Image (cartoon, rainbow, N blue to C red; front, side, top):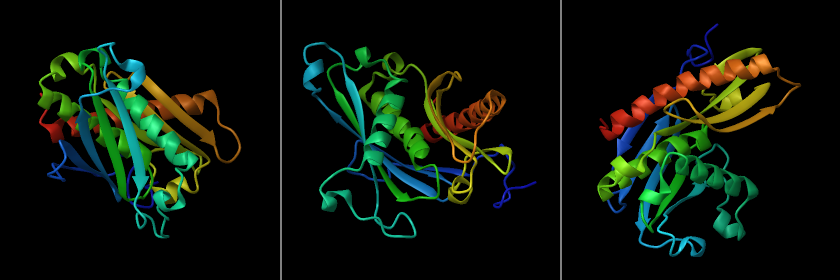
Amino acid sequence: MPRHDGRKSGELRQIKIKRKFISSAEDSVLFEMGSTRVLCTATVEDTVPSFLRGTGRGWITAEYSMLPRSSPRRIPRESIRGRVKGRTQEIQRLIGRSIRAGVDLEKIGERTIIVDCDVLEADGGTRTASVSGGFMVVASALRRLGIAADALDSFVAAVSVGIVGGKVILDLDYEEDSTAEVDMNIVMNERGELIEIQGTAEDGTFTEEDLTRMLRAARRGIGGIVKEQKKGLRWK
């Protein structure tokens, strides 16, 4: 049975990529999956955190935020509240370590690449879209630095997968996510190797067989996202 938006169970939402969305940033991408839109930018700084100084090793870190009207109900700015919420911190760390998994930090020198992911519109899968778009701007930054051939190990992307109505579905939007029995975010590289799995049974439990089916669906989906990443970057 088709999903509420007409997609098949293993079908991704339409992906749209607009590069150089912000002219003042070294690299920027507006990454869209369906109605979820995330603006990702990369900033390269010739410095590293104190624990890496003198090692010759670089670093990649990320910041994530949702604009106040990225959702139907206004989200107060965290800067006004005076603190970053735990959810935001967790997503930032996910983005950073996911991207680092695809880069040889020994090859970028003592530089830091800061990835900013700002959600313009949220319709499910904002963290996975941030990983996929964020990796694109890092790959582009490495290419501009002339070190992509050495420093880039593999492309990295992420996607959500879950069980809704007893059926495994790929790339959940907000409506599906809010009613899912199982909700999972999966990060892989282009070789299909796992980087991170975040999964929760929202209603009851799920089996090892269910997990295997979700991983297979995610692997196919991530393969499709990587193709779009490379197409958007004109990567050979």
